[in-house]
Length: 326
Image (cartoon, rainbow, N blue to C red; front, top):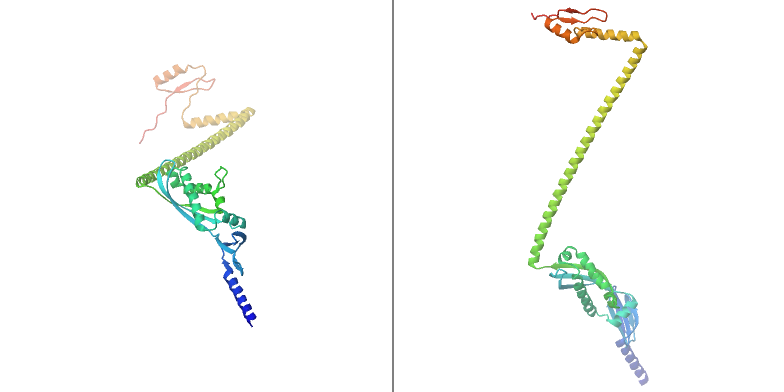
C-alpha cells in the first residue's frame, strides 16, 4: 500500500515537473518562431502550433515578419545651403528565410525595438546624404527622386567593404516616401513669388504659341491662296496657248487651202472687200501715187478720194454728207 502511494506521488511529481516545463506557442500568420535549446537555435518554425511537453531548457522566440513602417523627421541642409525640415516614411519587413532569421538572431536579436533603433540610424544617415545632393527647389519639385536616393543609400553597399544597411539588418525595403518638407516663412514667400512668376511665364508662353499658331495658319492660308491663283493662271495660260495653237493650226490649214486653190483665195479676198465696203468707204491707191501730196490736196479741197485699182485713174469724189436729223 505504501509502495503504491509512493508511486502515485512520484508520478504526480513527474507530471508536475512536465507540466511546469511544457512549452506551447501558437505562431500566427506574419510571424516566425525560433526554437532555442540552452541558447542554441535548433529550429525555425512557420505559422502553426508548437508543443513541447517536457522542455525545461527550451525557449521559443516569436519574430515579427510583417510589413512595418518607420517615420523619421529631421532638419537637414540642401546643396544650396538652405535649412528645412523633412518627414519621411520607410516601409520594410524582415527576410522570412530560415537562414536570414538565424543570422539576424545571432547578430541583432529578434526584438523590434532593437531593430528599429538600428534602422533609424541608417535612415538618418541616408537623409543627411540625400539632402546634400539636391537643392531645396529640387527637393520640393521632385520628391520621388529624393526618396529614391534614400532607398539607394539603404540598399547599396557603401564601397568600403561593408555590407548595405538592409543586408546588415536582414530586411528588405518595401517603400520610401517623402511625407512633408517644411521651409521657413521667408523661403515660403519666395516660393510663392516664384510660383506666380512661373504662372505668368506659362501664360506668356501659351499666348506666344497661339500667336505662332495663328501666324502659321495665316502663312499656310496665303500659300494655299497663292497656289490656287498660280494654278488658275497656269490653267488660263494653258487654255490661251491651246486656243492660239488651234487658231494657228486653222490658219495654217486655210493658208494651205488658199495656196492649193487660187480661186478660193480670190473668193476670200472679195468676201473681205465686201465686209470693208459695208462698213464705209475705202480708197484704192496706185502704188506710184505720192500719198503725202494726195492727202494734202484732198484736205484742201475737202474731197474724198477713191483710189482706183491698178490700171485705173484715181477720181476725187465729194464726201458723203451725213443725213440731218429731222
